[in-house]
Amino acid sequence: MKGGQTIVLENQGDQTTIGISGDGQRQSSGVTTGVWTIAPTLFQTESGAVVEIHTGDGSVYFQIENGQLHSLNEIPSLEEARYIELDEVADGMGQSEIKPMTPMQPMKPLKPM
Image (cartoon, rainbow, N blue to C red; front, side, top):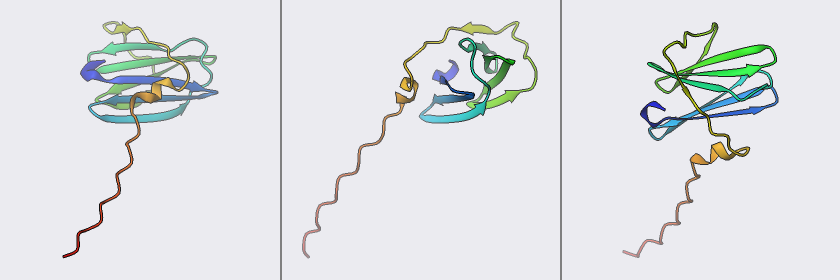
């Protein structure tokens, strides 16, 4: 993605989690979309990206612009957008990009004065 962003899409029941990471930051949003009928579609646009989630009730669209996620109320124009193939990973693997910090070591005792 533009600017080295990574987008992680995950569906659990009728909940979809969309994670955006890049520039050392990570943002994740959970939305109720319904169960996916097929894998989502991702398009790169001039201003960012559009995610199309395919559900039994039709498609739901989200725009990603400047690292921010926006729900779209109508079908966006994708005439000049570029289709981006998604990589499927095992459940939970998309969350492994950010590793937990190692615990701090205890301080050494102060020397007497």
